[in-house]
Length: 201
Figure 1 (cartoon, one colour):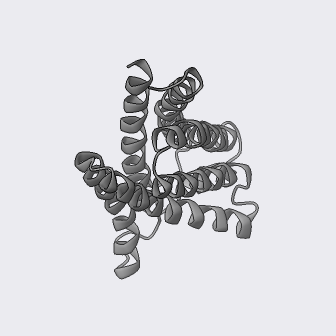
Figure 2 (cartoon, rainbow, N blue to C red; figure 1 turned 60 degrees about the horizontal axis):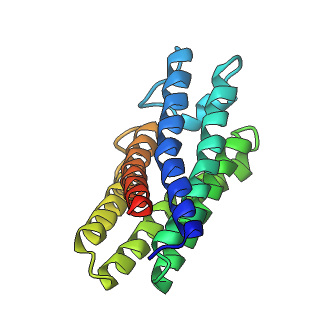
Figure 3 (cartoon, rainbow, N blue to C red; figure 1 turned 90 degrees about the vertical axis):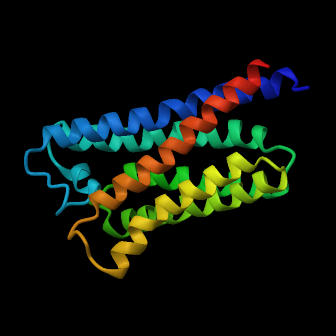
């Protein structure tokens, strides 16, 4: 049985996980719509963060605000959901680090070129790695569906980058960033719903 504190953590973490990608992609799409010069094939999404007017602030807010929500999802929800597994806690720690990197991407936009690049690489590397680790914890717990789902999302999140390094299929990185981000978002929302369901049982 879960005590009231763990139920609360699961509930808050679950709702934060559902809201994080919704907020992130709402702000991204609105930023894209507000910048007629943006190109999905030639730009990086982060190019939006230094555009004047409403575009830059909206884009950057979407990243660091969704990163904060993602950190709540990880620190409260994931750690409670995976509380019985050491491997799961390692995976939750890695995912927490990925959300901190997402916050960093929004706070340190492309004007802080080196710092921004480091945070961007950290996010897109740590997110799939954390999913592979969490998949292992689900496998140990004999939760086969969740294990397969997590590793599949990890592969989808990493594949656009591996293919881009193998052959440059687009000159910009907005497309691999979006595919990777959407994949991770699908996983977060799915886990968020399961956390809420577990809290209500």
